[in-house]
Length: 57
Image 1 (cartoon, rainbow, N blue to C red):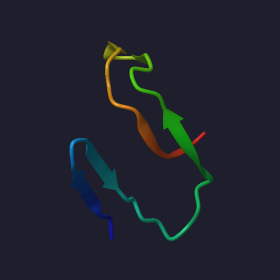
Image 2 (tube, rainbow, N blue to C red):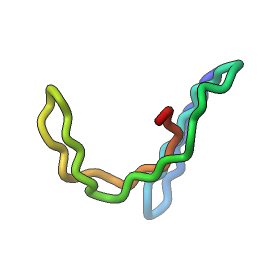
Image 3 (cartoon, helix red, strand yellow):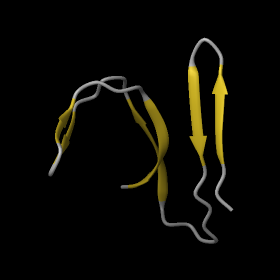
Image 4 (cartoon, rainbow, N blue to C red):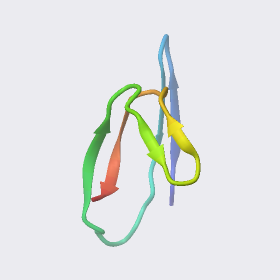
């Protein structure tokens, strides 16, 4: 079952799980605050929060 959690203090934290019964080779990834994302169909996103998550690289 997937779960979402928010934690509100002077900062804001959000977390979500995506539960699988198998491993797909995920690794911890960290994206710094305001890292420039370049999307194929959306252009560029220059401003955003820092992110920590799992990804298949």
